[in-house]
Length: 276
Image (cartoon, rainbow, N blue to C red; front, side):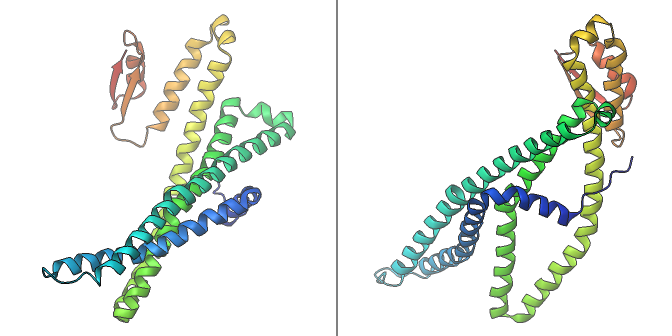
């Protein structure tokens, strides 16, 4: 089934809405990470200067040129470590956790306002899975922002600026390479996102059935419905692994092996390992 992608700008606006109550912490974390990554460019340069100094060092030569570089390196390295690890990440991870919780609470409030006819078309497991996945997705985006995106941006910009002072032609080649990479990567990323959405849909269906069985276990056992419901999980698992030529599955707690044989009927090409 086709799942319409969520527009990027709409996602950014939604994320901005959830960040707004914690904007101070978020921008402070971003500033700390940005400043640490900019200063780290000098840290690498200072370390290279120290290595070059001791490579050419002559015994008896005074260390007048060594101490300023070493002090700058030690100071900047200490700031980078403190700002990056104990400042930026702590603050942004806290914001990410709050955004995750706030988005899930808002989703539950929205569910309570929907018409009962919609609730009857969707099982509870699918609803919970979507709410959880949405909150986890927003949290992951903020973690990527503070862990990778700022650092990558600063490093690329720093390398291009440094190379421009050395040889502008090399800097120009780097810019062309970066633009070409983005031009090729964006369409491929869209295809990967579409595949990920289909996988998430399959996981929602599987988890939805499993949750409904567990949540209504008394009715399932009293009415003898389990023999009819259990194969639905196997069929869903088979659809989830259909794209793999030879999927590998672990059946944990399979007792005498009935589950392994049932899985083998739905996935004849799979490598199935049963562990009790």
